[in-house]
Amino acid sequence: MRLKVIAHKAVPERPGRSEPRTRKRRPKIYPLMTKPRHELRKQLQTA
Image (cartoon, rainbow, N blue to C red; front, side):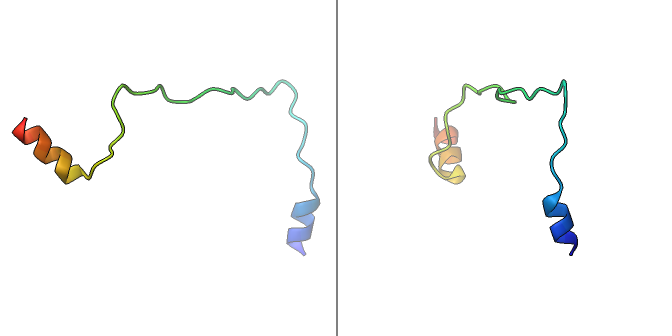
């Protein structure tokens, strides 16, 4: 019964509301981690 009541309620109009269409975080300059972490640690220690 409650689900039917909730499902029939319309979303109210929100005048003056705007949704920014941008990314929230800035991109980082680091590459993606494509190997397991323990392998990358070994590479850093030997370098």
